[in-house]
Image (tube, rainbow, N blue to C red; front, side, top):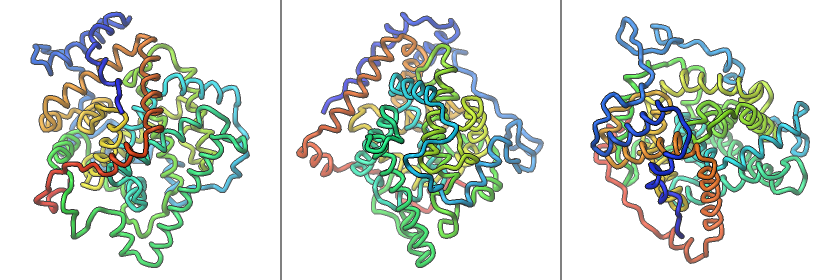
Length: 457
């Protein structure tokens, strides 16, 4: 199965010359490529958001107190309370929310179909963020549906197909593809929550062992940790630790938390809408798109309702402005501190995600995507960049060039969406022989000689 998605990136410089954009943007994009190709580019780096230092020397954001205690931002005060409540409200699957604006919902669906390539890329990067939260990551490890390259490939291909259907038909019309997929996903969530809760009550030690890749014993082979250790060092230089985050979210102890709770479900909404709504140009969306992005947020407010999210925990309720504020607050108050403390479970699940994704989107790279995300969040990552090497840095610069420059050409955006659709169609129609070959394929992991050292703290 071939994919042509990555090939035309080599023509990015020629295509970008046709794109109308500010001179400053051209300078930044060209400078990024020149740096990786050995050119001068002095002073051409995009200025990352600077970290300010407290009197104790710990960098902190403008909303952080010196004692590292972060007040819950107003936009998240109701949502974080969802950690104490089950994630399915029990709403009837064929009953739309009372506040649904049908015309707005359909406009948002049309926007999603027109820009599916951009949305898909933002959603993949959002998983790097969501996996920082044990309430999101541990159920995936427990269900064993995405912890190997092959199973990850199958699971996320299935997820993309289901989400795509929600943009193409009515999720409240009984018998529609969107309705059936919504019912299936809610069933998955309810089943996982039930099994996790039952095991927490009957055999908490087994639950602990089944939600990690090893407490005392590690797999014989596992991904290497140095890259993530460098990323943690960069994160420590850009954000203060926050014990408060753990205290509020209550998600570190798998035996006591409410599994797949309302906050976890709100984070799922964030994954599908937060980055694309807040940083649209980073994902190739240019021009005056406020009306369309607002409609897209309405889509996810309504889909969240259909998935069982109560209104007071709904990440997208309130439209584009509310979604953007919540996204910024999640990134500032919850994500930046947690980037300091990731572990090998986080890295492994992301590595197999990107390896599986590369089976139908060749060129997908965890290293380059991590760099792209750090840049998007305004987090300087010199140690991470040095660790991943020149190739990953070049891919990151090329993706920046493509998204912020080349995608300004409408025909390029159309082409990218069509290429992704073609790749998905080929993957969905792959022969049993090809699928079996993927299942049998072996992957080279780098042996981790000192597993005890691989824990950022």
